Image (cartoon, rainbow, N blue to C red; front, side):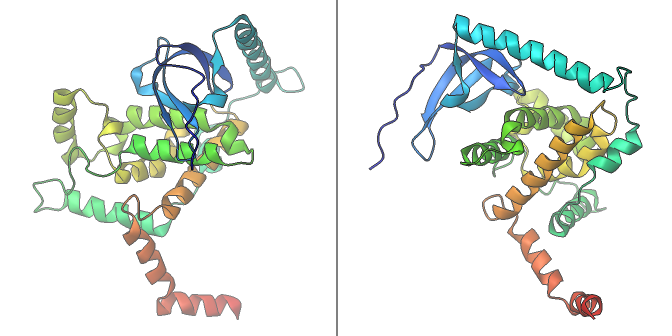
Amino acid sequence: MTECAKFKYKVGDVLYAPSGPLLYKCKVLDTRTNEDGKPQYFIHYHNWNKNWDEWQHEKALHPDSSETMEKVKNLKEEHKRKKKRVATGKTGKRKKRKTSDEVLSQMAYDLPNGFKKRLQQSNDLINGENNSELPYDIPTKEATVRKILQDFHDEVMAASCESNLKRHMNEMKNGLTFYFEQAFARNLLYAREKKRWKMFLANTGKPAIDCCGVNFLLRLLLKLPALCAFSSLEPEQISVIKGTCQALLRFLRDNAKKYGLEDCILAEEKASDSPETKKEGEAVSG
């Protein structure tokens, strides 16, 4: 029998929570237990947009105390020193920023063919000459982009072993959320979709990330390397973003049934069993 969770903090408590390498002031809005019966807290970061509200594990949170404030101060100072070291390098001279082509080259990763086919089919349906209606629900009746990112976050954080992905998971979930909201209207919508979405979001006041399904997350993952190419990213940051996106794609493959992507996996399996693919394999092995 699962033992009832004992919550260290309660709704309304002011705490400090991690986002990236730093700790930020936050307030507990709700509590729950995860599948393992461990306490989790839904927090709002002080002076942040509510879109950044998220669930955090109890171990990640810090009480509002003098000891925590000292830790916040030390982390800020260490972060500043690290940024300065990265910017100047060993020679003491400021390093030249990478060009957009260099960033794009280092960020590039492949979407599974099944996902690419799903996006192509979606494009054909939306932009077909005889299609006056969009071939999906607004809002989605399936898992939203925010829900999928939260599921991905929870699975990574629940892993028993430490990893680079786990260390950066909170920062990356927030970053993907930010990129999605910023890119949605300009980069993720076809012309035929824009009017409908603009009207819906204006009438409801909801953020797009809470209304869009998995296809829109695939659109973001397809376009993200190009979007990041125009950002000032260091090699270490590029590596973390690329690794997170590749892990997210694996997560979507592993949970294809849960998120309605079974057809993508079946399409890949069918393609791998085709005579043309087998001939190619035989030619390579020969």
